[in-house]
Length: 389
Image (cartoon, rainbow, N blue to C red):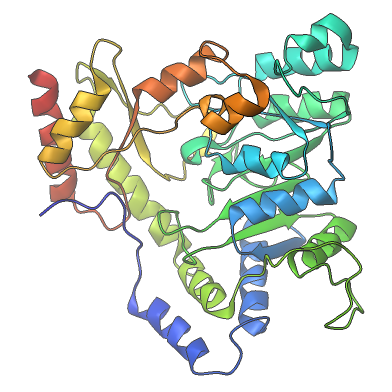
């Protein structure tokens, strides 16, 4: 039987939590969303947690809350899921990419420092970092680091750069719930953090996300934006702001609250599966296993991505593994080379070499907290046999 690429870790407690909501008349805008928000807020240690229906929605509401608009610039990376860039584009702002650290796929902070200085200087120095087309004429307003695959970015240096140049840090921790950098939880370094709860994440709500922040005013604004622009005091048909239907429903929130009671267990199970993989694959010729940097005091395993050596044909390897019942996926395809990004900004191959190299070499193996050791051993055995051929 083929091994699933990923599987949610759902138990009877989770099922009962959802069933209990279904047996009430309150399926939206009820107490379970508040309960879930309180649980996330307490876990992360922020003043506010605002539940939304996806991580994408969370990032978008932050862009709106920060008044990032036409032509404004936000520095991020092209090695991510497209949602991080899309949230910027929704408001017609311009994503400015810096390349990534090849060890982790996280933002290269040396390039970030250079990019911020050059963009603030303007002129020819700024042009080095801007896209060839539609490069924007607004203000540099924010940095959006991505905590790739559950490993936090280098926040000491990112925060120093942001402070020196008065920039907002929007932490995309959609893949990193429970991770920590130098003992501090991911999602708490910037002015905002965002987590997401798709079925392959550390905990799931089916679809869903949450924004965390310590800013009282911005939290109120994001709550209004997610609820069709209704500010505190507005009636059902009154709308202070242009808003969205980004609410999380009660069933999803109930599932999230139940899952969060097991967060340490779920993270530990994922750590165990990752360790099984690393033990089986360490030192194997033809691939490179994930590297955890010393400042990462806890990796929150989202996926397990190996890098295939340049001398190997990744696509052929993936096909042969699929024929053996082992599904694998490339992770990630560079955002700047997506067709719509080429149309918008005229990006080309070679613009971000480390991102492109990772995009050509990365291969996500089947991974979840419900994987058994025998399944991991089967995947590893199939991979070793195909690499040897």
